[in-house]
Every structure is written in C-alpha cells, then in structure tokens.
Image 1 (spheres, rainbow, N blue to C red):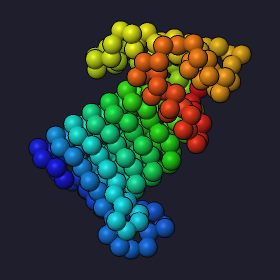
Image 2: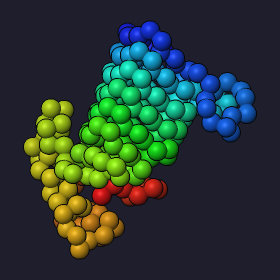
Image 3: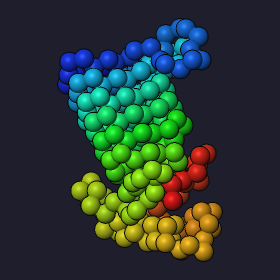
Image 4: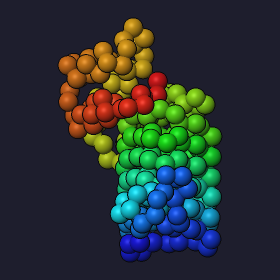
Length: 207
C-alpha cells in the first residue's frame, strides 16, 4: 500500500483469492499512491504464488465495490458504488465505471471509457467510448471526458471519426473497420491505442 491513501472502515485489502484454483503460497495486492478506498471495498489477492492484483495511483473506488483476483486497475480510475469486477479484468487509465456495473472475467475496459450504471460487461469496451446496457453496447464516444483530460482537438476529432467507422458503418465488420481506420485516418496517439486495443481483444469488442 503506497503513500497518501485514504482507506475507509471495513475495507478488506489483500484478502485471499476466491479462485478455486488457489494452491497456496504468497500472492498479494499492490496499491499505489493517493487512492480513495471507501467502506466495504474488497480487493482480493492474486491466485498464484508471487502474483499480484494491482491498483495504480489516484483512483477513486467507492463503497461495496469488489475487485477480484489478478485484476489490474490503472491510474485515475473511478469505480462507483457496488461494482462487481471478476478475476483477470484489466481497467485502463482514466476509465469511469458507474454504479452497480458487473464485469465478467478476462474482459478489458479501455482508457477514458465511460460505463453507464447497472451495465453488464461481457466483451471488451474500447478506449474513449461510452457504453451502457445488458448486454453492453457502445453508444457514443467520450468527447467530454477526452476534453477534460487534455486530449488535443486533433485527437478528439480522430476518435469521433473512428467511432463513426467502427460503429456506424454497418457494412463493415470489425476487421475491415479497423483496417479503414488505420489506412484512412490520421494516426494520432489515441487512434494508435484504439487499434492496438481492439486487435488484441480475445473476447471481442462491444458493439
């Protein structure tokens, strides 16, 4: 546990994994600096000896939220009350997850993504997108979030166009849409990250 963290009563950090594959040893949890961990937050240790569940810096994790074994939460992430995050989930920097969201194991939430309350995430949510529902669906791109977090106007415009290609051109499958984004749009850092994230997806991306 790093410096300047605010841990409220009844939070349990580093409790034994609930994974039935646990065979003993000393897995753990690593939490960075300047985080808020409210009442009844639970962050479980990893499953295998020597492995860690991790939370970065400057995160805001609210009451009754659960982060299971082997998850990796980035920096400046907001997780609102009563979110239930299964094992091996990756949440990238500056993502916001509203209340009572359930996230299935081995899924990912991309950087600056915004997840609406009471959603069920069963596929990867790409960076910079707004998603909501059960099943999860991408509804728009996170224009306001990108602006607040200092993404350039050039980067925001590129993501707006990428969203149009990926989610509004119904004649394109995911592979063709990503190829079009790579070949026709300016390759800003945001576009490069979007492409890398989507192409690395093992569970498929939310659409």
